[in-house]
Image: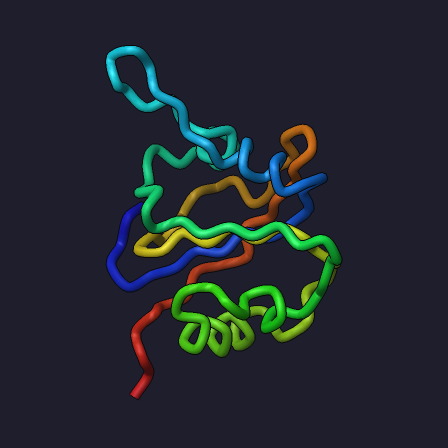
Length: 131
């Protein structure tokens, strides 16, 4: 669900950067209607703004939340919040990260495996600064 000031995180494994890109790619009908990406279908997300999505595939898997999120938009705000939510070490090594900004995922699907991509929903944090 689109919600101002929120960011949702998924992490997991992708066989390659192109596999992750294909998993996230939306398509369009001849009439211009959106065909949801496999990611949106798997996690039962009706819609999200692609302009507010960032994703990264890493050659070397990591369990470090800060290492995986470094370099993403608003990393100085979201890294401490995701560390507070998850701890700095994930329970499994991951090489694929997906962030949806201005989006609060409230779906029931926690994890999914779609061919060469396996993702797990990790949580949602606010991008607002805590004062």
